[in-house]
Length: 310
Image (cartoon, rainbow, N blue to C red):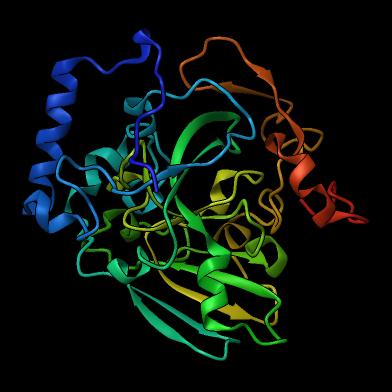
């Protein structure tokens, strides 16, 4: 396994030294804990994840700068503003942390986060993140295929869907004191979507442990879907027979469908999805079907009407 090296970054994208040092001080002070208390044993000093290998980038693209990836987020548990998660996530305690996997499985199990990190080799994957508000990023995520976890609990023949449940703790997550969503946050995938090799159980980005505002300590990333499908700060994964009722479907069933596959031909009721603005760019660009991953995933939806199953 090769040592991790950051991908080449254009000089114009390099974070200024003073901002970098401020970020380091924030990481060290967050939640009143030392850095060593925040990171698992498999993490090297200097905040980086050890033993990470790079996979082939299916859609080579210029990376979104780290400072934008970690300061412009949707994470309603910490507020509805894009800057709220960065400002409000510091009190989130990511140790100890467990993920319960249960439901239609032969071997239900509670995984400690450090145990989870040892299930499969970590790899970097450069994926696009496409949000329904018509903005996007390109991020070097770190994790391993969700399928590696699900195989270990042995799904039964009744397992048709996978439900993800995020942490519910209003004392740590002040945004949960607002009724903007029905807490805890819930999302779901069809079983074949969850087992697809592109679906990533994610624990880091840019070579580092996952920042709190980006969904620490573990989240899902599904690159061909809108970003709201990627549940953050996950504490439970349930394999179920019936399609789960997700948070955004409850909040706006005419706006947020279960599948959430990126389809530029279907407008959101309040704005067009035909174009997107990459964070850092001034001009918009055409939105790609399935966020550009159609060659890999379109077969999952053969025969479905994606104008209705949005």
